Image 1 (cartoon, rainbow, N blue to C red):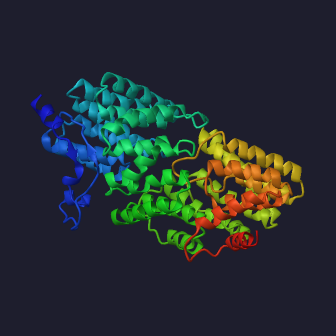
Image 2 (image 1 turned 120 degrees about the vertical axis):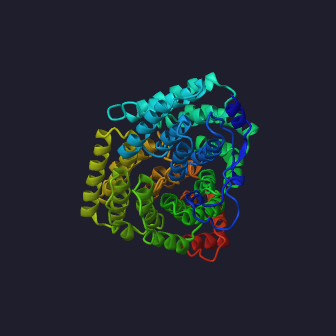
Image 3 (image 1 turned 90 degrees about the vertical axis):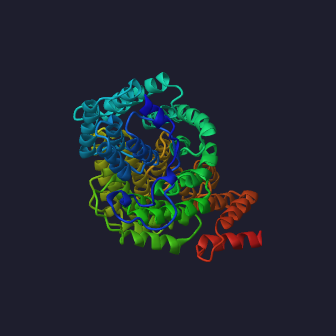
Length: 535
């Protein structure tokens, strides 16, 4: 009891505990500089005082999704106090990435072994036993049981922990995250996200410097319809845990959802620099994809080009992940397609990857680029490859990614049909792609679709000389993805062609307002300036 009371008294402002590099734990000299800042966490457990201190730091790392360091730090907890069952709980928690992608077989085996170690060490309190049993529900029978079923089992278990210990803010935060991990990607009412957000908003009012609370709030509302609810947390999270690259990056999710490009760029520049300092390659690549996307929306082509080129200079000395391979595929695809350089898109080379969803990104860009540049044989072959990747994902029961690739397949097929002279069929197929895309939401791994399907539907309508209908689709796309460069440009052109000069002026003015830098050399901006000067 004395040990538990001592732990309860340790409300750790983690920044005061450790120097900026975790290598100091291994006997190396930490570099001079500001102390590590991870936010405020209080998670008392029945372990020795030194283990408690390390455990609290590990939980703060976990809340900011710094999984590589979290798992090492929880392991150190068990070295300091081998009887600390919650240290093994932390290792298991760090082997699952609830909002990113299903763990690999190696991670599942590691998490399952950690649960066994926790059970062998023996929880000292009912509360700790409940936490351990909850994560145990996720790893139980992982070799046979479906990932979704195990995630739901964990969510139910954490719901019980939250109900049993209503004053435990950690239980509330982890339950809120579990709700997001099991949200139905087809539920556009955002039921789970709203329930999660309600819990987190209450916690944020009480603990505004808790890293997990601010972080999970941003994720809960990571949708254009909800993003404004996370704006306060987005502006604050980077100040809560500036030592963690993901904490610096995460606000950009909200900024992008609201079309705040400069804020997104600033956040990701800081995050990218921090990722390089800590040699966290996954986050370095992740931020590059976000930076490419945002810079293209403000017509910073040369900056975006340098970022795409920088991908080739990133050295990977660790196991490849979906997030890494997605960035490698998405950034060059965005760079070609957003600039409407169809030949460049068609010439992209698929990279060797173990993730079908990332392969699909490249084949999608190639197919659209080939169809729009007249290389119909290549487009047909790439469309067929997309169909194969989609079918494989469906067979593997990766429902979310199968749907995303199906959208890409339908989109590429539509442009192939248009190039082949069947405009009516192309419109029907393209509309089905846009409608399908709107039945789900974007994955946290990406700043946005490579190109919004509804924006492409509007492009097609404009090509087919239906500007009134095109304008409606551009405006619908801009509501879901505000301030997109090509969306605004398309809306302005469609409005002008439809005879709505007032709207054309407004959209052209918005387009010009996006870019205030010297790097703005897009022909669309010259067109906007000329239109506004003569109308």
